Length: 312
Image 1 (cartoon, rainbow, N blue to C red):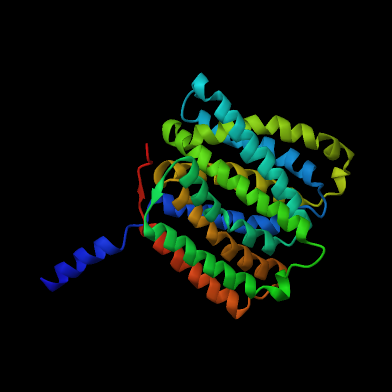
Image 2: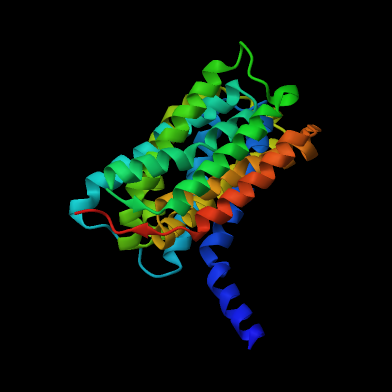
């Protein structure tokens, strides 16, 4: 009898790991690695040229994924404006802020600053969608911010801000707010049409703009002297960090909503710092290790939270 009660309590207190959870962990792993990949690739690529190559690649992959499910669907006319704006916001403005920001600051700094996305998402979802969130969601986000504080406070040796970096950090911070706005704005469309169509539509809208902006830089490059590792970096940043990650991100928006989806982005600096250790030889401090543990606790607390229907 005691065992049955324990099993029943365990089922209530320990929710099952869902496909959304696994997908978001995968996205965070991809994005965490992507910071170092981009930094290495930008040694040879101009930022605009880099995007001009990876965006068409990502759009092709997404359209191929969409086509395997049948004819490519189209949104209803009343949603054209929203999709166009989201495409420009999440794939043009965000990517320009991000790519120039990461060029002007450290990869670790970028990952830590982007970890503020859940805060902006929660605030915007509350204001724009009039959503109400339980204490667990707010508490979990607060705990993860505490973890991020530990990570940042312990990063002075390798990731300290200095006089040459504030512009890059500001650009990355603006990209974090932009991504939060894209996340909140995409939620209802992802639930109505599905994650894959929304991801493909918004990326395809942005691709001609991004490609045109980077065409001149791409033509002026001596592409023959670009090493194979940089081309691999472009492919990784296009196929995995854009196409696949954007799809899984929107899939999670569809299933669990914007605030809980965004909360997982706090895992990105954990993976980013681990990647920096392997690729760049940066050894995390004790404070960073403690912060990583706190971030994981915050994610678990947020995972328990529930959102109430939006106020009408």
